[in-house]
Length: 359
Image (cartoon, rainbow, N blue to C red; front, side):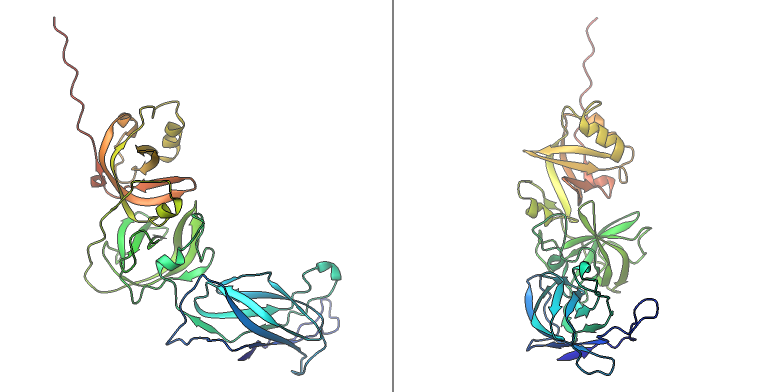
């Protein structure tokens, strides 16, 4: 399995002599490439791919070349130093790759040596491997992580597997909406926020099923989102969104991470007695509109300004709220419930009026 990338031959800056090699021939060992009809599974596990590279001159003949080549995999991730060292025009070894999706290729380019102190001028010859064909990741596969502040495809222009799954809109707000993959377990990272920058499209009603979802995978303040989205929706009738998942512990960050962007619920949560002027939580409330709730030894936060703009949260200090539901997002070390409807908040009963003193 061999591929060549034919580029216009490069010359040194200033019209100097032509720099060889002109082309790089890339050959893979005995590996399964998959096909568009039967793609390989998406995987976050490194796979060692046997590769050979041969330097060729402008006539396509082998050329005597000693130097470094840069290595990339697009799309996907490398598992090692992104450089190889070619001797006598050839190199053979393995390149470890993971997180490929769709057509995926290993690239080699002559960008000069890794140690720029060698002074070798780059020739910009390039070569690519034949394409691997991988499935697009499900939401849960994309968000499989041991670091709550990143995900498998962070920084990629990514596409998520939705065409054969029940990925539905679970809530919407002024500049985006949330989705859930109903075919993956609750708490498996099967939820995502889609940032549309403006009012979501009219098709993105709660319960609508997506048939296409892609865009730039970002970690915004440690919450995963797709921005600049490419979207398509099925003409099916909307389905009921999933029930809220109960939040009852915060001592397992990865378990909480698995519920990011899901609809969640707090029961009998207490607004701290000291939530008021002079407290750090009150300063955050004035700056960001987020106010604290405590359940057991866990402190959560609520963002209510969009759904309940008239609520004065500081007036709830010391009170117990029977129920709070919202969409869970992370802001670095804080977990915040975003209310999407005033009905997401059940307020405590009004305090009885103080009795009048006897005359």
